[in-house]
Length: 134
Image (spheres, rainbow, N blue to C red):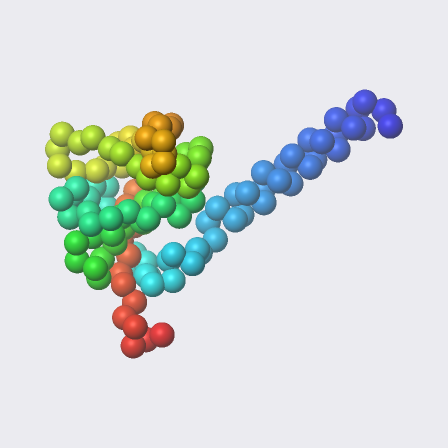
């Protein structure tokens, strides 16, 4: 097989894998089954109202509020390499809020190793689906 043909095949396969990764990045995940999008977006959320976080993948984090009926889905500005693998995040804020454009740092909970820092996107409000509806 000639070099040019091999290169074309590799480029073609690379494009296919890239498109597949984009297609699956926005698929609904099992962790979202208990919530529905309200259609409301926020640029910032108050840190003191965050009860916990759930990292869905390298693109998305759910910020669960103290009121268990509300949460926010943040779709990061870009892929945060190894975010899901690392398992937790750390952040610093001076205003008491996390906002679009702020940075979070992926953190390995086992070895306390700091990972990459990634920018937050818009916060999409989620409403808990009551158990009676299921």
